[in-house]
Length: 154
Image 1 (cartoon, rainbow, N blue to C red):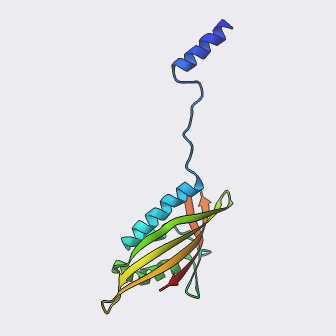
Image 2 (image 1 turned 90 degrees about the vertical axis):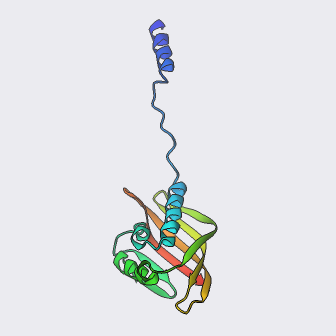
Image 3 (image 1 turned 60 degrees about the vertical axis):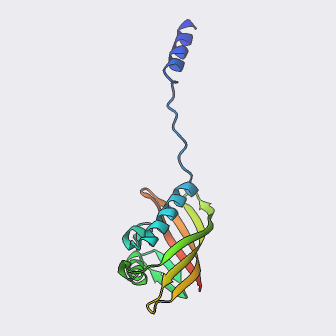
């Protein structure tokens, strides 16, 4: 008993016997950080950084304006066109907070509203609102979008 009390005292003195790990960030916290970085990379018109958050697979699906784009390569090529190879002045601003729906421990749906502002080729300032819904899958290297849908109100 004396030995047990001595051992317990030693453990308390050196900070405990069991290593305490800080709580890991939740899926929502992890994805929110990625969403924040996606807005920053979109505003920098950095297609490669922005597209890094999408699953680099031919099974990726992205729906926009009545069109369905299949695969990372096709979506990347389209994003380059939309941002004119990084030469656009569009600025995106989140409207409110993103909404999260956990579908499974490794699948999360997000919905986020954003405003956009850009200059058209004729010099007119164009504004719009878009809503982006994404399905995120957790991979060993982190969360990535496997399905996305964007709707615009111009």
